[in-house]
Image 1: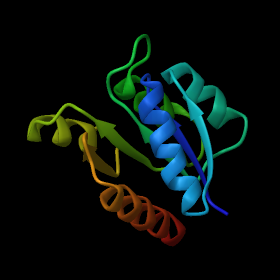
Image 2: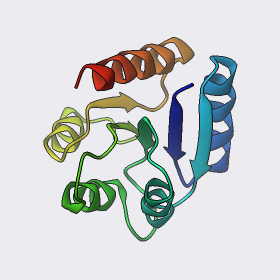
Image 3: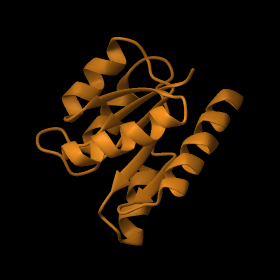
Length: 124
């Protein structure tokens, strides 16, 4: 069963995404800060990280920078963000994200993105 780590500083978003993905059969962990993402990954690598960009302390860009500095392969990252400009999406992809979902996203968009990214990660 694939493990997905979700990081968002909004509890309602965390609960909603967790509910959806657990309903699809995924094992889900949730955290609320960028530092917690790094700790969680250090404790056992998830298959996919769903990451908000705007968070207090270490933001999503900082998390992706830290992941690039770690030895070995890091899990793929999909950004879930309310920053809805195309330049935001391009910047996140350039920073290492594999995909970008604008909030609000649909259940179908979330599930399809997760499926596609997990399948792509298996091929790497």
